[in-house]
Image (cartoon, rainbow, N blue to C red; front, side, top):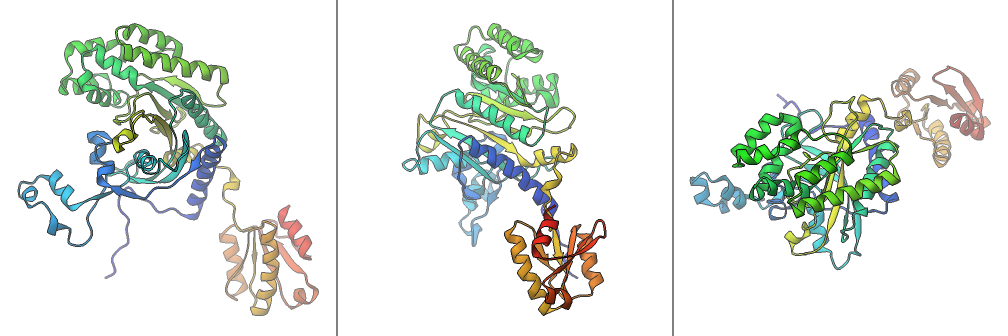
Length: 457
């Protein structure tokens, strides 16, 4: 009995309509990237494990897909690790490569490896798939595309300002209004950790804080306690849990909370600079919002942190995010190269556009005319016309087989092709074409120029 075909959980097949819609998003993002001066690169789908491991925190490391070594991978396995059931040692001895988890760390590796070829500051964009061993759910997949833009070699805050404008430009072009660009600063988080006496537990603190909107205040406090953050420290955090109001008013509140932290005050200054610039420049359809609980549990952010929320009418997680990573390339031996970047979550953006019915009809550019095949002589005559139509930018094709006319017409109907052309002996002799409008049923006999004009109407 034949095996029933299937695909792994968290992966998907895409039909022609879905691919067309995805390409619409890709092309919109790519166009904006290039308008803002970013250059394209690509990196391999898998990297050496040492390139990826330890760069995303404990949670991220657990979600990296490992690739077994080729051949008899167990022959070189660490036998001690196997008998002691030490999965970490065993994994490192049977797997030396892993699928990339994101595009940022491979980009850092790329910059270091190609530093002598790169003109800094270097603005790059990258649109490629990534893989995460996550639990599949709505809007979350194990294989998905990221669309990233980064700048390395500049610590100017004008880059952050430009990235906010870039987000606004893309979502405006997609007609996705009501998007909120949330921003925070890692220096503020470091300052808060310092104020509550938890500087040595910064990652634990930020990972817990990042979950506030998902699990609530009490659960976040419980997690912090379990990580060794004191009751007294958590009590000092209370103003943070209730912080609200305008960007400016939150900044003023933070000044009071972080009055004893130089690092925290620097983060406040950076946020205020970015907000003032955006206030002057303005945004088309997006809104900029300060969210001091925004932490994003990744180890490498050191300055601004971004996360983009879909319009409130849609139940969806973040549709983009990013931040500044002043020391990311240092892990590969290239120090003092500041970087900042953002990412667009293609799959979630797709779901939002679908739910809000925002894909334009022109996305599905169908075949505009099908030539009916009555035999080899007629087919050759048709293909001469098809060649000319294609040169005019008209999507045209010949039905490949000289099947019954009813079958060919049904094929045109099922594919929603608006025109069909019928060519017989009479048309060949007079060098004309019988053009049928499949929507109105109207049929005309026309020459090639008139055929082109009718289809282009």
